[in-house]
Image 1 (cartoon, one colour):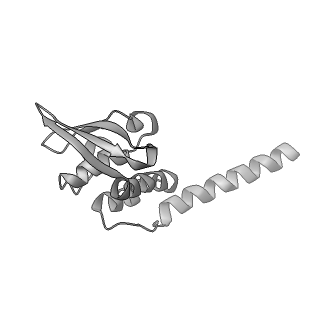
Image 2 (image 1 turned 120 degrees about the horizontal axis):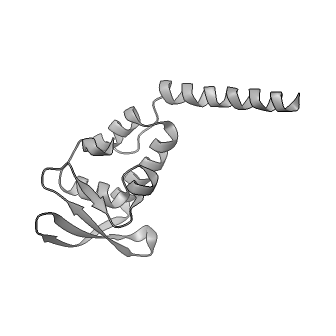
Image 3 (image 1 turned 90 degrees about the horizontal axis):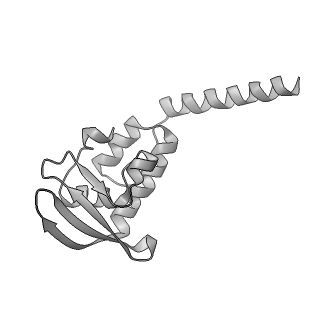
Amino acid sequence: MRFESAMDAQRWTYSKLVADSKTKTPQRITPLKLEKEAADFCTLGIFYKFQEEVNGACFDCTLEGMSKDELECFTVKDKRKSNKTFNVSYNSNGDFVTCSCQIFSYQGYLCQHCIFILKLKGVESMPKTYF
């Protein structure tokens, strides 16, 4: 009987979270179109993690260096992570950006270093490969 009660509570909580993520629009902290697109597309949990990365891109990242071959390569310093540097690769079409921190590969959303470079390059919309 306790098991059934616990399962009912879990189902109710899950249904509420699904409904909230479909009906509520989260509050944005920047006017960036990247953040607006994420608010429209992502679940609330993923959006709030992405929003932390947007905040870090705006306030904690600085450009340390740049080189250009087939891809543009940037060195980004992250103040939140003890001034550690990360390598970000970007193609000029604006549809590919990758970072040495590999957050997108592990977590499924862009890191602050990639968002910083997209913002720096004037890319307003999220590249389609990251939806």
